[in-house]
Length: 366
Ligand SMILES: Cc1ncc(C[n+]2csc(CCOP(=O)(O)OP(=O)(O)O)c2C)c(N)n1
View 1 (cartoon, helix red, strand yellow):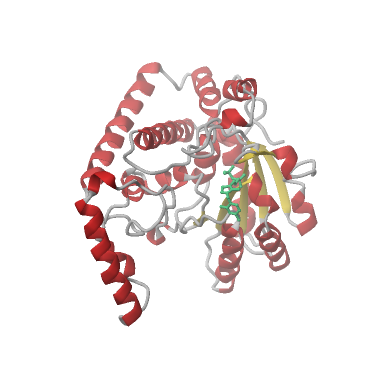
View 2: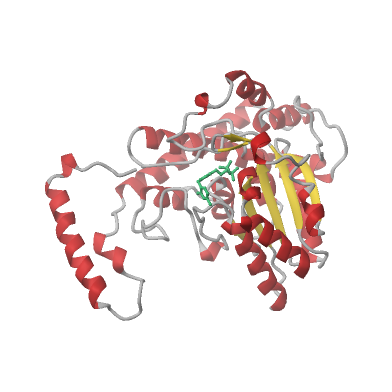
């Protein structure tokens, strides 16, 4: 397993990233931002302001280490578990909150569940709910990119559960045969909802699955941001040089619930959570920065308060923004108006008006 930092933040081996102060502080700053976004989103859900979210606590290094190693022209094929990659791309939390609140500024016009981000201008494909579909999408996009002589590469993010899908097999097989420029980033957070890794696969590791597809596979410590950054950079370079796809298995742990409607206490021991919490990526990297003499509590406090301010401001803007009118649901379906849809739209608008009249009785369906 590729690892540069032990759980106490001691440097175990040399890597250029470990000597780059600006990069290290950048990685740490964005990991803090992901953590702050995460707790803001969960609070909003608990206050009943948004309907749903997928916490990513414990997986900050995977999101930021990989996002930082990519070029802005590379295409991301995300899962719902990488809002931090989108945050890093946009350098602002506002688009995330527009999506969570489903405002008129949301690029999917409020039609998607929260956490289903998508942004063509930022080269961030829309999150699809069916687990694993982003893997085949990335393989197909990367093949097209090669045919077009596009220098960009694709990266697909998915969890350990997704490695049991047909899309994982079809995507990695196609990618291997056609040697497409795609990085397949598996965040092995030990659980697919309530299914533990031991019930997911009998393989020694997820990275070894690359062997069967004739592609490069690498296992990294997903809680070591330097390892994630280095592995993703090397994988992206390989792709850019035409050496074919890479499967990265980042070994990590989902410290929070699968989603805002999950209670992990039903399927795992608190002691297991506690041992992974002690190995969490933010604390580990803070210790490293401190040893390098690059960190101070004052600096972190300033960073946190700036992020807190930006988060509060973005939430306030998104909360105040108008929601799309119900009839917009019927737009963007056909280029010409269609009689049956127009009929359905009229029916829905009149029932929406009814709901408005009985607002207090209306319960959100999720
Ligand atoms: C094809 C499919 N099967 C089942 C589900 C229900 N489901 C949603 S998330 C999830 C767990 C996925 O786990 P994993 O791929 O490990 O990613 P993680 O949530 O841990 O990031 C499941 C089973 C789904 N959305 N799509």
